[in-house]
Image (cartoon, rainbow, N blue to C red; front, top):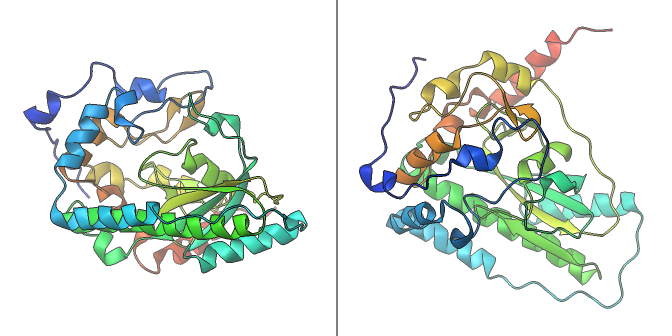
Length: 319
């Protein structure tokens, strides 16, 4: 695939851009580890890019607005009170129960991780010990239309489904006498969900900045539940996606604003894949979202992920 020709944002949007680079806020090039700083998808009045976020929302078309209303309805679903008498189970029993409940509530994949301080945004607190990370898959036929509004609406619908699944799981835990706090996108959570999902065994970070799962590819969205119910953490699932991304150039070549680099970069003390914020966001804003990188990702074509995992496993030398 040939590289996409450069794209230029509108003068209207450029006029709203703050002087501070989003890459600087994200810690691009920083050699020392630190907590992430709030940025896009946090409250518009607390980030330099807040005016851009409001401009983005004002340009919503009716199809995407209907999906946003579906998400809002999910946010308004009430949670039951925490029962006075907590049910006592072993960590293994609770882990099995919460995973079954998450899947029953609508999640397609689920994993458990212990909350780490470096995942929590500056200015935010997470008092719970555990994060249960849920993944919900997009409809592939809708997502592959990116950057059309059909794909944008599908993304929002899956955020809504993730919120419903997280609230379903949180409600069960609360009925069992254990506090649980659900979160779903696209608004930012008190903590970064991608590193939590990696620790919870949901996949590896892809070159396009999204998680790659061994069965879903990167064709899914994340939600979570924070809780102190005793659990057993999962372990990262390394199956070759990172190595594949080193050799694949599909998303790099297809990205209209040229935001995806072919190599890893240093971000807050970690060498990892990173999508250029200042290049990505303008295109995202002018198209109600993007997802072109996901639409061209080889992992996302139906039935391909399992085949790729098998082929990559064959390349691992036996001891």
